Image (cartoon, rainbow, N blue to C red):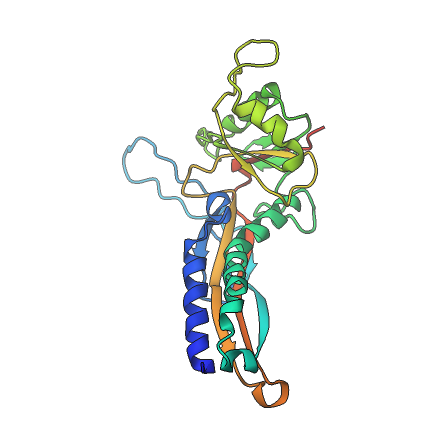
Length: 287
């Protein structure tokens, strides 16, 4: 006959193993920042320390504070298990549910990142550090203005045009930032076009495909339209930030035993996703 404490320990071990073994697209799309407070302020966004010739004293630059801050938000999921099932060793029936809970918890960071990706053109929900929507046609840098949003179907020609635009972006001092697109991101509706664009060596007419193997392909189910995105995900800084104070913390309680005759098992996270550098991402409407 099993006891609640033993079951809780077993469920936690099952949860933790599955959580640790599961990979998340959030680790590809965003940089993980560990948070130790209710919110964090990102004073370095928009500042690019670039190398230059050392002449005389060091050219010391201060980080410009754009005031961009990100508040952590609480998230949870909970299941109930009848105490009769605990007492008569029926807890094995719940192992898949605990594993799925852990899987969903680990994937949740990618869900948060996908949400802000889809809100990136919204002037109220999608603002980044410069006060404009993340995907915008008027990002100002020094005396220049750049667009990281446009139109056009997912074709090699449009990919090359977006690639060239991203690589042309310069910083405040006029130096090229070295943006190098690495990933093509889209939803299921564009999967066929994406495969043709990056995995087919030859085009329909038999000519060589200029974007063959140029980018890694990432399909996000949350993207339900024909929009597609070109991103530079090869740098320490990413287009998005996943701010984590707590991530998939397993919890259990038997406080309801007398009233409900059941135990509770769940997990919680305290985190949020936000915008980092618009320079590393380009969006096309897909039409």
